[in-house]
Amino acid sequence: MSVINVRNLTRDYGAGKGIFDVSIQVKKGEVFGFLGPNGAGKTTTIRHLMGFIKPKAGDCQIGGLDCWKHRDEIQKRLGYIPGEISFFDDMSGKEFLKFVSDYRNAGKDNRIQEMLERFELDPKGKMKKMSKGMKQKIGIVAAFMHDPDILILDEPTSGLDPLMQNRFIELIAEEKKRGKTILLSSHMFEEVERTCDRIGIIRNGKTVTVDSVETLRERHMHTYTVHLDSPELAECFARDFDGICDGNAVTVAAKQSLETIFMSYYGGEGNA
Picture (cartoon, rainbow, N blue to C red):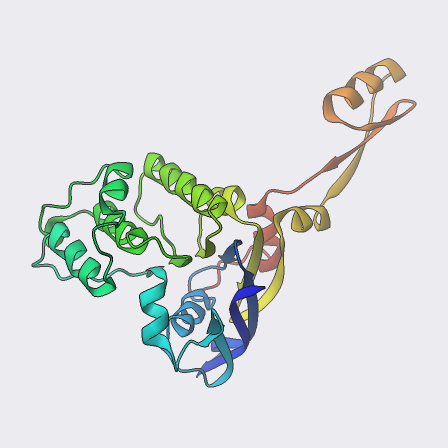
């Protein structure tokens, strides 16, 4: 059963900008990675899912509800981290989290303290004086505080140091085990490889592939044949690299990294 459904979604801004006939589905309990460079259409797709933009063509649903018609209900149910987080600068982090908690009716059984401790964050200071990393942590706490079943996360570890990125990856793995449904847009290949069941790659506003990480690797697998000086050396080489030995020759298969696979869809371009 798909919890998040994007079907033939189109938003044409002209000059080749926008999204065109985008279709993705995220199943219940799945972590879905959404990959693409800046300007490829990830955030535009997510803004449709959040009900911030009305589709020009196609539609999107979350939990069977139309994302535009039922945006208020959907926004209260799910956890969301925007790609560009905006705060009330004159508020302290603590005041902002209370504001969000009251809006969501999170009650006393919220996860605020748990998340603050996990990400080693003291939210008492003014937002305008916080670093990018501290603001990102506030955004993470706000998204997870009410323990939502559905999470939409747009570049959630932007600005975090490697230790906190790893803490976030651990959090996603835990939430996945708890059956949460998560759409994760990211530039961090390790983050996606370690957490996602399937991946959708978007280029120039169009989805170019949707598959599991393992299927993508198998599809982009390369085989090499190495010739050694003797059958004995060939046998040793085959054992060390899990190859197939045939006399002096050894054939080995090499799976590509997710980053290499991603770049193959972009032809090494740095297009946005």
